Image 1: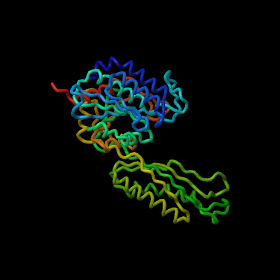
Image 2: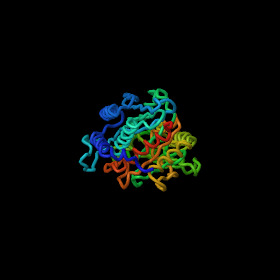
Image 3: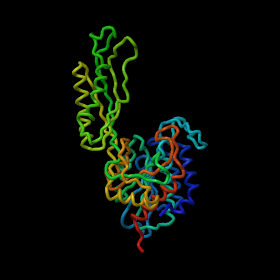
Length: 390
């Protein structure tokens, strides 16, 4: 079944919401205006219950089916936050806030779920309960965990949970998904190496933290090449190396920062263990000391098998045969929907965003032509997961 005609009728209205969100981006938990508009729209749709302040600035809407909401409950999540990036698209609806922009399409995610909520509240062609979840702080703030900690899953007795993200480079109207590990755990490290500073002309009187740090950067790559199973992915990237400020001075300290990405919990533990051992041993072997702050970030996004098959089937009903990739290669980017999938069975799917700039790029923009497909996916998922009694 193709896109829902009634949702196609909403297209201009949903596009207007999306562009308003785009003009007024808010980052992390600062999504106050966005949350207020989401809540106002949900109330206007006649949603049965609208609750704000879940996970600081999250919004939850509850839509009960024809049977009064008895039975199964499914959650459908969209993220609301933007990024600290200066937009350079030149669009008439470009960000009005310098240094902030919707460079990941969360404005589109929010608007598509709002469109689905309007339709579901109007038609109620299902039994059970649909919980629409509008989440802050996906971009590094773990807003999903904050909402869970505030009782998201238990307060509304959510049985299954589903998420969606746009995918630049995939044609509009197509979807992609996979069972199991889909996106990586995103851990972060900060290392301070302390040596003994001195004159660059007398290196023998110093303990050079730059040399120690350089050895550490190189040795960390052996985690992937010599410690981890070659068939299991791990990425160790040192992205910051700071030391010194004069050409003739060996500094006292050097700082390394970066990220470790894994797709397997066992490899994640191994990487942390080997990281700490390598950094400590090399620093000590060169006469320096190392202070390590290893921060566990988002866990691996793991799609549940049965729910992934179900999501793919719904996507295929909307997009048509041959328009759903069920074996998308896993990727090393992170996503805090992982926390929701640790709490409940569900699946995370990607929807095509056409030939756009990449995510987190200052030229990125969500393709409004994707709106009817995303909305229709949500509606068909709800109506199929919660079929109305004949």
